[in-house]
Length: 310
Image (cartoon, rainbow, N blue to C red):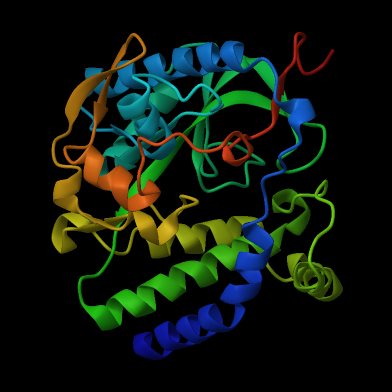
């Protein structure tokens, strides 16, 4: 019976994955009118990072700077000058302990946003936020106002066996697609112009069938959570950061992370993977080469000088 269910999930994932990719891959609005106050936003985020590291170090929880933040640490010895977020990753076992501890020990004005702990929070990626600082962003809904945050990703396992790897991969995609369709208005960028016909078709299809009426966001989150933690990287020695925008480029042997090594991130001492350079090369290619200005990634944030209620 279990095999039949896995096969069903796989088939659904293969069929609907292309539509999911069409919708999800475009969800960064590069509206330059929002690209302001970057240095101040970065300073706030580094304050959040220090609180995160304080808790991890106190309780011997392992974390790693990852992806764009890791690239910044290696190439710029700090944040990438045009980057406006910080990404850290934790193995599942350390992450679950962190949630339990930090929910009690985190110091104001910092708060944790997680779908299991925060009412109304619909994202799978956990965020640590500064509850006193707000930004206006256009990468989901134009004019959306949120706390300044850093992202905490979970590094989960992938099967070594090719057949099981295939099934698990498309099972993950299927569950993530269900989450996307459970609240299309929440996940879909509304400000993007000149969409290609196939993208408009996919959006219309979602709107026509109103999947949000039959897919509950919390149930979709719980099912995806169960699927993601079903493979233990400590046993398979193969990892993935599935919620990353780079997805399958983040599949690495667990020894790429190892115990980690310390380096400076501006003035902050942070842990990075043992094989950071190999990871960056796999994700970015020639990672030491600066990209053209029009290819530099932005979340499109504008810092608000007053609080959310003003």
